[in-house]
Length: 338
Image (cartoon, rainbow, N blue to C red):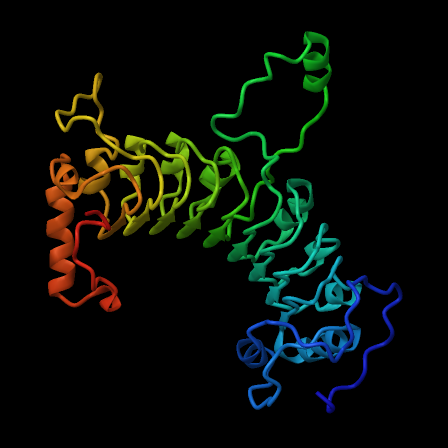
């Protein structure tokens, strides 16, 4: 980094929680050093502090990659927004509540904001990042989302006058995301439902979606709008069934439903009285070859009775026999069930 010319002083100092520039943190430093173009560094741990942040910003002028993970930042340094060619930005594991002028980073393709203090209002600038392809918002404070599928009813014990006043207050909704998004992670946000903006027809390029570790009780029929989806992670939610429209995702290959509430009382299924919790179309009409149901109330014998499950098993066997999918299908058990 000594070869780079020093930047002019930042007009407004950014805030961090007190750390000296010599205080090591528990970050995965080798990976970060590689991203920063400092593969040969002998320093085993990441350093924090304003001096280190400034050095990284200087380096990012050349690499167009900036990792500020675990720097105890309370806001994004203003000089970051002047990196007009920046393509990758990692802000994870800080204390950031606002994304500031991030919309100025018009070339940004990858943004990681995991483990911060962002609410849905703070996400609004992301909608203007017209080249963004990868977005991770895990472990923030997005649970105040409205405009989702299946919002809670008003509190019946609340006085009617107070309910009326609350109804007149404009509640922010989840923002629409750039149409260029291909990978989206919103795990660990206690979302009660899937925001309708995530199931928008505009997100027709979305390939991987992670909604794990939330409080989602139902998957909306609008999920069928995500026509390019290949991987869907719904682990650790409150799902008891899936909609038949999920079977319209013709490219879906991986579906993870670990630790939900999917179970059956009888395998004598009927569309009206005892519908199959995982519809036949999911097994028959998609490209599904990787299904994980570990931690649900199902047994492998029951799953074998599901209509369409035999088609899934045959498809998975063909893929395994051809040694496709990068060797990932090493477990040929019954989807994580006993």
